[in-house]
Image (tube, rainbow, N blue to C red):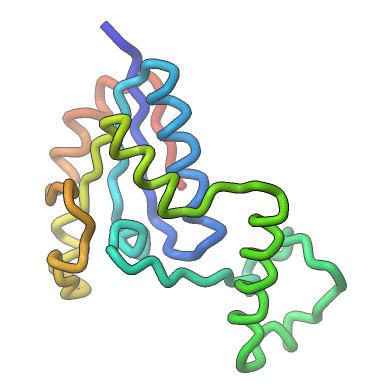
Length: 154
């Protein structure tokens, strides 16, 4: 019987999108049965059009080329500027694009479950989701997570 990794993905920003896909693809490559439960803002990660941005607000640990006071981070255009800077930095360091990591997870048979309650709550259009995403509630997730070796909340 193989090991299991269960991940709950709750964030919808570019910087928070990487951990679930990196961990899931790595676990799958190591032979783990892996499942990601996308809920609340994490549902943005399974949309066909990934137009995610970086948010430095509320993230004081974010390394920046120069110190930027919190008040300045709230100015119009700062989020877009920081997103461009982050994408440039990732590309220069050879970090795979998010779409590539997500595709890798699907190729490795990582199961993607979109939280039905959140879909209903925020009126997501499931036709905007990539193929292969299942709809399910917390009970479906617990069926897998209850037997998992590792369960992560991201």
